[in-house]
Length: 473
Ligand code: MTE
Ligand code: MO
Image (cartoon, rainbow, N blue to C red; front, side):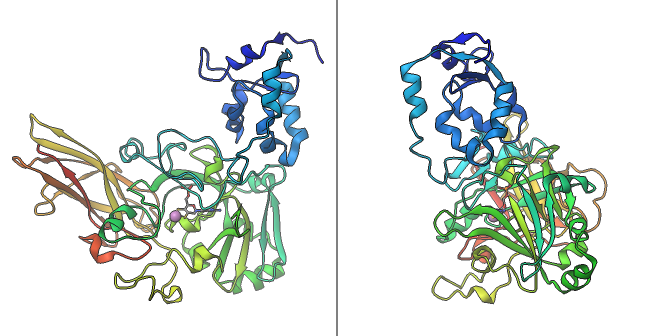
């Protein structure tokens, strides 16, 4: 044991990140470690906060699983002292984490997220937080997980590209991937189930009751998928890639019950139209957070969130769509007349490009001026920009144009990030009223008036006019 000061257990306990200078100490064996900096600056480092002010042992599985030595080396550099023997501490250290089920290794999340489901974790930010910035801060970006967040050690990570028969065409380490030219694309990702709550109110649907926050916008940095595919041996390039009709993405997250991995695919033509289909390792200039796919996720600008596969392990060049549940038995939409007895999932194509959407995220009343101010987002899939947002303060009888925050014209068919907007509108004299917004994209597509007309049994693709009831002005 090196020459270090000795600390009482109570002293370590007081450094739980909540008191005084908010420093975080943990104990492991006989060592005491100051992990304040480590937790803040390492990808996944925040995991260690679980042990803040206490023994690391009950949480050790997360660190030890793949590469204990590597973690121990880092930890030793952070050592500040030795722990004085303490009965209670030792007991706690020996306690095996009883909840260590498949969800024991989930990341620490912002308390600002509205949780729709704990395990798997599904959460959206409060709507009004979405309109503060063009880029959604990483810790507020909605999270849609179908399974536990996998623990992936960067040294062991590999990205593989295989043909339909599983023949390896490309295999890259994270370092290799980062050596390819880095591209950055601003792209909004939206869950097909965004605003499902309104469809559910029309008639019960299956799925989490998302409000309008299952959509967020970020700048993604990574390698182009096209550049990775170009690394295939040239014989394969001409045969496999030209014959592939679909690019199947397989995640490294698995269903604890069935063992299935999350997977989804896009038609290969998307790659020709959208050069910046990325294998992203950065989000808003930071390392991709665990909840959003650390170390690498697919970002397919303009396409539904379900195809932007997180924790990406393999890309399969295939003549067929992904055979996953999420490609074949989910993320397809149907007529309002189709119910669970009559639905045939082979009869509808899988959702890819998203329709035009908008939401009112925040509003406030000025009693003196008798005006209502509102702000929101508008977005359309397939690179279509937003040319106009109309707002109404009388349920859609009279309309006014909102001011778009994006200045200048948007790049034709290459606008992948959302448009935030603001409007101030005359409030009705008195009584209750209904605020409404609807957006128009660059192809003059607009939104349907009523959720009833687009109801579908899975509650997907709700892009009806967004309505907010306000009380007496
Ligand atoms: N990728 C994997 N591996 N596992 C998942 O559960 N969920 C998908 C997609 N990619 C998912 C995934 C769905 S349905 C959506 S909407 C987006 O990720 C959500 O991305 P986010 O959590 O970064 O917002
Ligand atoms: Mo989704």
